[in-house]
Amino acid sequence: MKVRTKFVLSLLNTLWCMVAGQRYEHDDPILTKMMDRNFEMIKSTTFGEPLNLIFINTLKRFFPSLFKEDLRLRVFKECHDFSKMLIDERKAEGLYKHDPQNYIDVFLQKIEENQDDPKSVYTEENLQAMLSDLLQTGTTTTNAFVLETHRRGNIVPNPIPRTCPKDWNIRGYTIPKGSVILSNHYSVHMDKEYWGDPEVFRPDRFINDKGEFVLDKRVCHFGFGKRICIGITLANSVIPIFFATLLQNFNFSVVPGQEPPTMEPEIGVSLSPIEYEVKITNRAAGALLEQSRQG
Ligand code: HEM
Image (cartoon, rainbow, N blue to C red; front, side, top):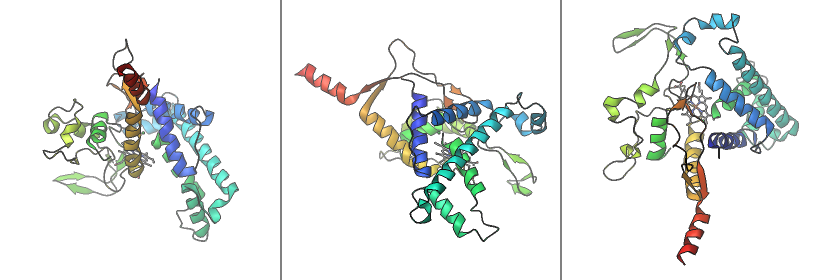
């Protein structure tokens, strides 16, 4: 079974249940189209590309297809249109007025409450932009295994570039106003001096002598500061449940005759696994078979 697609569809479904109260079939054409386009877009660039950061913005306007800018604009537009469709559906349903069911409903209620305030951030335009952001980022912890997966997986190696709002002094260095700040989480997660064996997947590095889980702030996969990832709560509550449910119900093994999946990622804004196949067997069925063999 091809698992990358399945996992992403399940995560998108969880997210959209919270945001719009919608659940889609895994072969739903809208959902699969969104996912395919997002995969394309994620692969189309990285935040760390020096050219992207320096002068390429001007060139992009003249040679959009060379820099895949046309693809990115198309995906943004599709996400915006999809968000608009969801908002219109919730507005037509009208439940938001007296019995809000989800994130969109609550936001619509706030728009109505603040309609006389010209400075209000609760506008339909902002709601649409936020839904588009969620749609594009959603498509990606309480225990050592999950933390080690985040460290070794480096899903977001270089987070969103930020701009320094004013001249800033830090440890004797001056960062001038307007500088683009790009943090390199990959180098922190893979620092040989700190981790010793960064290439090795070893969850026990987060378990102390007493067998307790110890959080290590060096794992900064959600970023830090005021613009830290807003999806933390969702990701941290969903990922362990996903893992636990899958491992409780299925055994995962290498497809006979095939090599284990490569650890090399597909490089883009986020690092994702290259599509891989896994043999999945039902644990309950396996246990029954074992019982019947023994007795
Ligand atoms: C394991 C999963 C995830 C990881 C590793 C991750 C990582 C990140 C990182 C590193 C940033 C940039 C923070 C910075 O600039 O310092 C970010 C921002 C963001 N993330 Fe996530 N994220 C994950 C899941 C999600 C989910 C599920 C959502 C949606 C519900 C989401 C929505 C966002 C948004 C909207 C931003 C921009 C926040 C802002 O600019 O204020 N993320 N994420």
